[in-house]
Image (cartoon, rainbow, N blue to C red):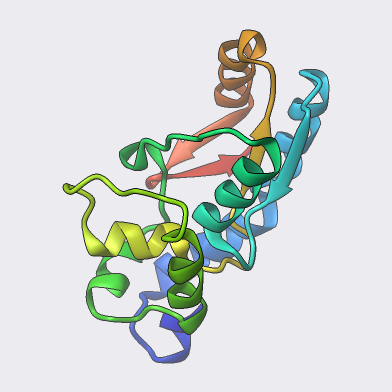
Length: 153
């Protein structure tokens, strides 16, 4: 949304972001209930990495993220590379770096997007490992992946 305020995002990318935020969690919330999710949170103010760190701390476990698998909205990398990074992302980065390690190949834009405070950034869901593959399959069936992001059907 910051990119729209400063005129750096295309109208199409902005429309896709709004459409995604309207639908992103609707079907995911239904599906996670079918698979007895242990806990879940919507990715908002702490960014993905902030929420992951909080879950890991509360669960006394380590969580590994394959950052290349995390979908981003169209135009996100371009905005981050131009320096359009909200202040909350830097605060989130400071918080997560106290308990995270990053692969040396992780580029700055992707790292900051993973720390970006979102208005509606999807769901972080914890389920039993035995259910993970089936749940992901059902999510893929019910949701479509377009333009590099999930769209509710």
